[in-house]
Image (cartoon, rainbow, N blue to C red; front, top):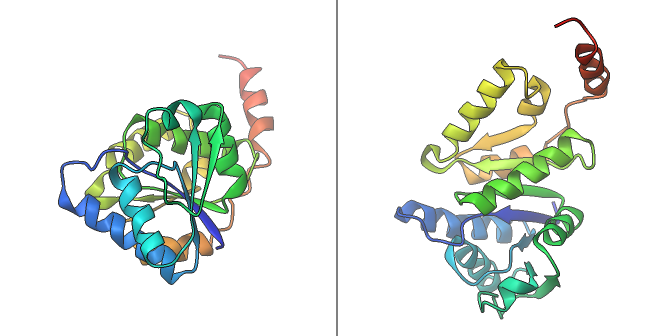
Amino acid sequence: MKSICVFCGSSMGNKEIYKSKSKELGEAFLKNKTSLIYGGANVGLMRIIADTVLEGGGEAIGIMPNHLVEKEVAHLGLTKMYITESMQERKVLMAKMSEAFIAMPGGIGTLDEVAEMLTYNQLRIHDKPIGLLNIEGYFDHLLKFLDHAVEEKYVREEHRKNIIVDDNIDALFEKLNNYKPVLMDKWIHEIKEESHGKV
């Protein structure tokens, strides 16, 4: 893949493995000759990945809303930086420019970005793969919630299966490269039928 967007924390987290895996992920971008697209910050795990890519001669592209640039958290050494007017515009541009997405440990912003890309897939706005780098089970509780939502009939099983999960970076890249979207043409018709049936 030519470009992958990474969602991850603007903080370092409380485990050294988060930092070491961020560096390893940056090295994987270099090895796969893939451009990094990310939130454009010079803090947290974001910075480690971007610096690793840049130090290895790779391309690191940031996308950041203007109000965060004004807070002086923008990485000034990137290959290119796109400044947007809003967070929503940032996510739209990330989706447009990227061929796939990888989420690493992060907080509410990371969760928001992952949820938006999953929604795009569900609605067939795009069919781009979304991978979770599940370092030390970081996303286990999120996956458990999604499994519960499937059981309760609020998330469809085919949408849940569209999420790629691995704790190994090379394996995750391979799965993203081999991704084939699950066909979901019938689900809108089925929820219409369900909604007009007897309760």
